[in-house]
Length: 256
Figure 1 (cartoon, rainbow, N blue to C red):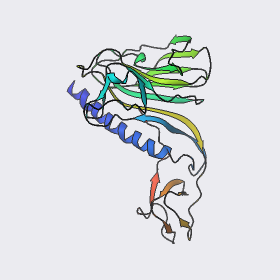
Figure 2: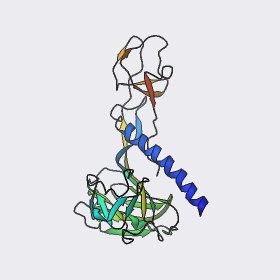
Figure 3: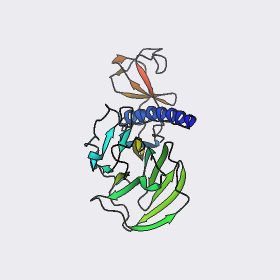
Figure 4: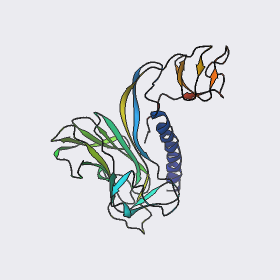
């Protein structure tokens, strides 16, 4: 079990780095990459960072928020159900959460509700075993389109919902009933929501051009963010002068 907790810690640290990058880079999607392509843009994320005992961020979450608090190590301890304050109605997307249930987990730990908080009606199809052990963190995910929601646990598809009304706005819900304030086993490490978007190409870097902080350029197939105002001179190409440019990773999906 000790090795399992150690592995979980490594995964969580990697997850936080990836999601932090996702938040920064998704803000740059309006100006895009060297070649227009479809990438994932972050719509929502919560890393549950804060001091021990701090409550749920009520800007991001609503519902029974009094039943959740931070443990001070980057996790949310939750003994009630909460759902996102924002709704999602994009044509496609993916919602993911790293959860340690403290009991046998199931797909219902991460769910969707209608805009008014109602359960979505429709056809339900079981795709596989939805059980998960109770001593480790697991990745619960929902991939959606206009016509379906597909749940998975650690990449294993377990259930599909075909809603009666296609394309309706929905909220994401952390459905962690039970546990209470004395429980240390019901933990949420991070939550992220992304959607696929097409981004425009950034202009190519050119010598003798004046660049402002925040400008984006492309050079030899890679994308760069300008860090300091300057007029480009020969030899100051992106990648050669770290003080002027930072490379933007084209892959910014929070892989949780």
